[in-house]
Length: 423
Image 1 (cartoon, rainbow, N blue to C red):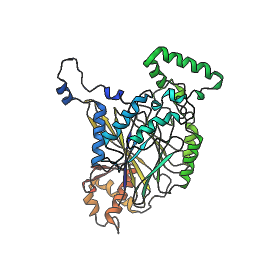
Image 2 (cartoon, rainbow, N blue to C red):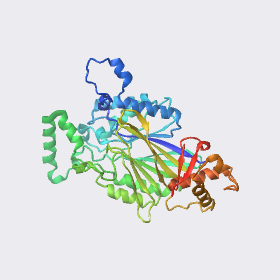
Image 3 (spheres, helix red, strand yellow):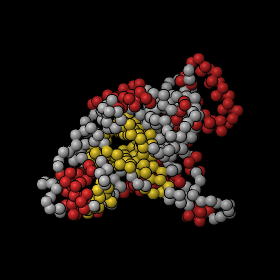
Image 4 (cartoon, rainbow, N blue to C red):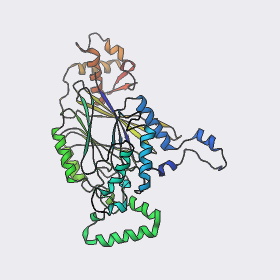
């Protein structure tokens, strides 16, 4: 059987502020019935988390990864509320309904309390959130070490690695020493005078420097060299590796060593998915060099806007075949729905099947235009001499990953497929 591993990628949650996000209704009448308003519209965060719960319940989700920024401006009193909300609303962790689902959590810059960051010890600022996650039965944040976890289905493996990109967040020692004292005092004075708006501006346009530690980069490189050869390496961190399309006039909010990390990942010569939040756009970008495999960066939207379902398809021998990203987003009418998927091949320079049946199937589809799955199975002469349906399914997946064909009803069992050749 061909295996599929499904991962939900959830972006910045920003509780409790996100719970106040505008509903999709233009309410000019303040006296309008609250009960009826709740029937015809809903708070986006609640809609998103209800859909995630439904997918966890019904769709064979193997892992759920949160991209950080659970709260706003590092508010200590919100750590407990956000941790409890994640655990209880989705029934994850502890002995809850979805405790079997693998959970990954990484820290974001808004999860850093600035007063804690001033205290001795680089890891001090991460301790309170970790305490509340532990209290609610949730796994810990990666702090000093990368956290790795594997999802397995037969000989198919998704090797997930959680990284801390927030070492510099909130830490005055990362301001250059020549003007650290002056800038540090100026920031404190401005925040004291400006209140909440000034503190929000600090987190939006901060003077600290997100970064990966050299140790964690070294761990990932070493792990990539020793991990199972067929495993798909997945890395999750809050900050993006690439500057985004929208110009950001806040240079210190980007990863200062992202270039070194990108180069190290490309040198591993294996396909890698890099999942991140932080930027509230949702681009999918593919990086490669002439001698490397692909490095695919996937951004999650803010949780108020939706989430991503990432489906990884494997060959029968367990090699990663393709990555399909399904964006769950709100449409213009405020309805959360699954959008059209983006399919990215993962085999790259790895050995593909040279079975001439691939060419015969494609030629057949070109000649007939489109074909039902049953017609392909019953084609005479048969396309494959052994394991007909499994061999045919793998061939269709290979052609689909290469964008040589399109498959209608792909989300259903193969018996419902209608396969069409592309030219």
